[in-house]
Image 1 (cartoon, rainbow, N blue to C red):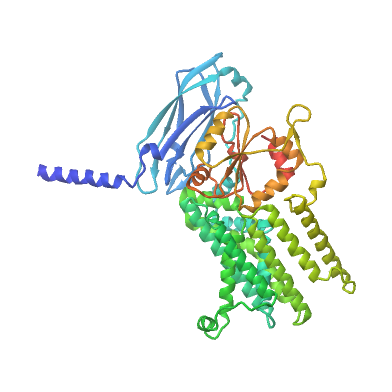
Image 2 (cartoon, rainbow, N blue to C red):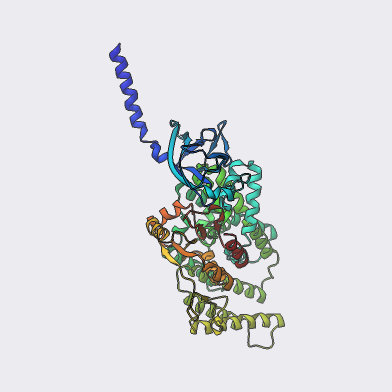
Length: 579
């Protein structure tokens, strides 16, 4: 009987050993930390591993070896998880101290941080207590109001992630629908307007408002599905899938697709599915056209869509930290529908107000053809030199203005005015190209004295410059060399349109440049999307550029100050002044 029991116990131990490989080791699941801040408070917490959570009531702090007392503890908000209050995101607490005995000088003491957590895979870890040896200049305690505790602020994307965790599903979906409507007003979505308009116009005569609406809905639904799939995969696997779609060969390929679409709008040929395939798919209906529209909507979302914005980043943060791809995916789908509602209006209006066949129809087709070429050039901005892009836009604009009859006097006043404006701007682009300018907004900016920053002695001036890093090691070295200074870290990529807008609009503002000169400027270039660049992005919770992260003088991330997406100069200046 004893032998049987021994064999049974041995089997259990062996089975447990085999299964142990599926779970994180304690030092991988929980990485505790504690430090004294410049405000004479203690900041402590635990960085959680994948699929790990901590019980809220099991996380506590205690002081030993000192007469200092804990005045108040500020903890993050916990969430309900299977009937227990837990932290799904790495918890961070702030401890405010008081000095009842009137101690002076620097006091050494021990902080005990206790915690207990579990794995979503079904394993609960033992309680742990971590000791930290800390020092504090108690003279700084007098400057801390004991009734005021430093609140743990979250960045915009983290607050959105918390909204998903704690909110009701209907409110979450409505909120993200609103986010989508706001995103539809961003420049990154504008290139979709000529695409969907061109798709509707290309249907030719006989197009009814009802069919235009149906085609627009199919386009937007396909776009929403693309965002949802890409977003969920990016959240689950921690990969910026959009970066993979920004490889040069992909950009060139899709740019050629839009050139082909433009030439078809000009009447050189007709693009359509083979008759045999259309007959097979349609089976007597017109579904073949819908399939083409759906494909265009799907691809447009992946290639032409915005780099990243706070709502998208918030949903990805939630998916990545909780693994709840269903709710996160629903939020992304709702956001995509919000982005697509204005596009539906554009598509329906293109179908409703299409001119009847004739000279005007040819003109409308030509206009959308030019828009398609503009989208193709816009896509190439991600990989080509700005000067090349400038001359391409210049040639396109000059050619279009000549087509409109810019030098003909017998045209309608409005048409002639539009042609003249396009011609003047295009010529200015050409002159800017010859002068070495690369700014589409200010092609003749070289005629003015460029904005410069005084850096010391009179006459010693320079423009802002960034230290470029591609890995965690490179960034850590820069942080170590600049301890005691304020640091701005800019996650950027050459294929990111919003990054270029930040560079050309926000960072070129004279007041912004002057304020930014007070920071050590570092740029995390994630253009190539290498393994090292992915690790760097993952460390700081970045799912895609542009993201601006700020470090204080002790090289600690000011998480609540993180900026995701494009920001206007005035707003950015106010943000910098708040640091």
